[in-house]
Length: 123
Length: 123
DNA sequence: CAGCATCCCCGTAGATACTG
DNA sequence: CAGTATCTACGGGGATGCTG
Image 1 (cartoon, chains in turn yellow, purple, red, brown):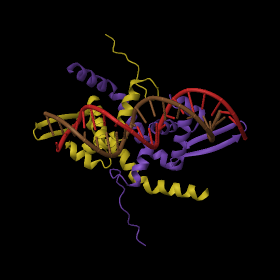
Image 2 (cartoon, helix red, strand yellow):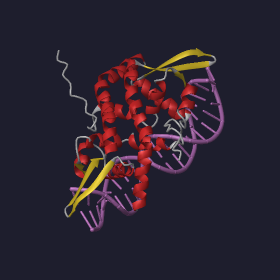
Image 3 (cartoon, rainbow over the protein chains, first blue to last red):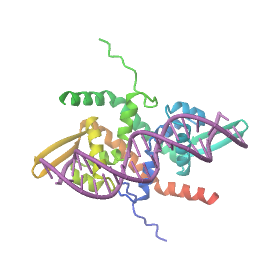
């Protein structure tokens, strides 16, 4: 059989990769995936690590990432509840690219602030 | 004088880098910055390249990126209007990391779809 | 502890119309 | 061509309360 497929193109509105792209670059997804790159984490640990995320959004984000095969959810015990989240192989492959992005933003912060100031001064 | 500063930490809710991070990972920003990595582009060219973006959102996204010093806006002529957008040095440094992200998503699409199917089958 | 259900609000983003 | 202005709605996302 032929396995020829259209190459995925995230620039096309209706390419399925666009949706995956938005899952991955979502407001909380990058931070959650990056946090998990340090190792498996429990729900509460993630909640504290990703400062500002609500329970609802963390839960929702994790569900999307699990559905996309980037995160694995494991229930260790029911009473007391103990759930652990781990990166899958796919998630592990993705994480370094997100960390590279975070590193850039953190390093570039002074330059960004300088650019804003310079611009504000002109106006 | 001492130039000591708190290291930027995007995981902290009130660190200024969080805001820059959201500017850069915004719904359209990644695609716009990546498109500009091919070279300078005019407004209409970007609008066609980034399929699905409205004039309003493209304009808004470009303003944010310009303000953050990632994109340069140059007016070439007023009648007829001709405006060109270019990556700054900072934007040029960022773009490859975004392209790495896009490449991953496009390459991983089959695996993501497979993960979804496997999951749906179980349910 | 790890969520889900519900309510509700505000902002984001789309559509549309207009301008230099 | 390259936007701005205005209106609207839809849903993202917070707060709260409850459960196994």
